[in-house]
Length: 200
Ligand code: GRF
Image (cartoon, rainbow, N blue to C red; front, side, top):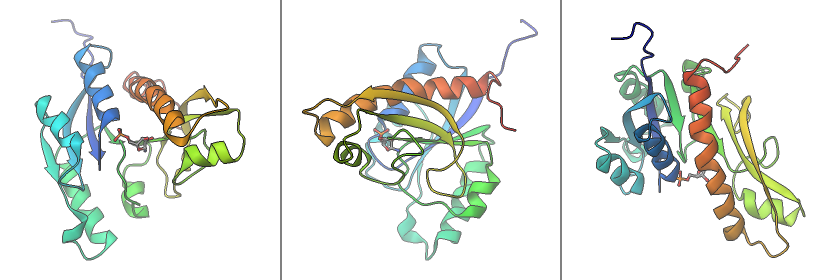
């Protein structure tokens, strides 16, 4: 055994839907492009397709429905307890459609990443593709950032740009942005795994 073997970074991935970013991470790990291990996938929605992807990849999965909790604090506490059972090094938000409480976010300071479909600080929140088209932007894209209490506001780790074409609709533009998301999210996680992100 080599003495300098690096142990893979332990990831917990949170999803609410399709999980194509989750799939990109699964594929990069399978192709030995990413020194990481997904130790659990957690969804707040039972019908999230990403759960199927996790199952196919043999990853432990949980549904923690927000409908079973009376307030955000309670939900976030249960989520934190579930996550921490897995002792992750990094939490990955991959289309997790929930606002997180400050306490939860601060618990994972510089240990939780999100991917957002815009060139932050532009277009925080929803409908980013249509907003970029309406503003007449020539460039649009996506950003991976650390999560801080303010929505879509934390330090940016990586961005990818795409050209906005004259005849783009929100759908055609979203498709090209998504392709870039699948490249930069695994890349950002690799930077973290290799200790190449400065956090102070
Ligand atoms: C992506 O567009 C991401 O930028 C946003 O949510 C979407 C998730 O897509 N945060 P998927 O579930 O990974 O396919």
